[in-house]
Length: 195
Image (cartoon, rainbow, N blue to C red; front, side):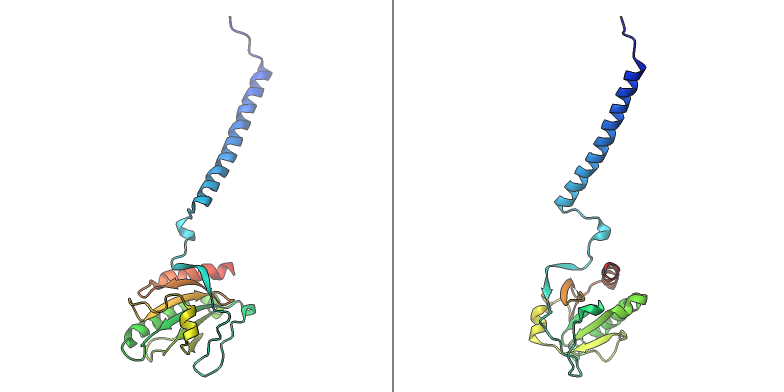
C-alpha cells in the first residue's frame, strides 16, 4: 500500500534538491575555473602576440644617449610606453628593410590615436633616410649596454628587432624580424588601456 505523500515534505525535498543543484553549479564552476587557471590555459584574446619576456629585461640603469648627445630619461611618472627598434646596418646594406620597418612603426604609432603621445619610438642605430617617421621618434646611439639589455637583439632573420618597454624601463615584449605590425599594435593598445 502506498503511503500518502505529505505536501510539505515534498516541497521541502524539492527545495533541498534545488539548493544542492545550485551549490553544485557554483562550486563546479569554481573548480573548473581553478583547474583552467592553474593549468596555464588562457583565452586567445588575452595572450600576447609578441614574445613575452619572462622575466622582463631591466634597462632602468642604462642611460640611452640620443643622436644629439642628450640623455633620454626613463621618467616613469609620465607613464610613457616605448617601442624600441634595435637596428643594424641601416645606413648601408639593410637600408630598404629598415625604412620599411620604420614606416610600419609609424603606422602603428598613428593607429594609437589619442594615446600616440604616450608612446615614444626609440630607434637604436642609424635612422634610415627613407621611410615615414613617427612623431615621437627618438634616434638613440647604439651602445653595448643597450645591446646587452635587449634580449637577443641581433637576429639573423632580419636587420631590426622590435621591443615594447614599459614606463619604468623594463623590456616586456619582443618581436622578431618579419613581425606583423598588427600584432605590435594589438599588444600595445592593450597595455595602454591597462596603464
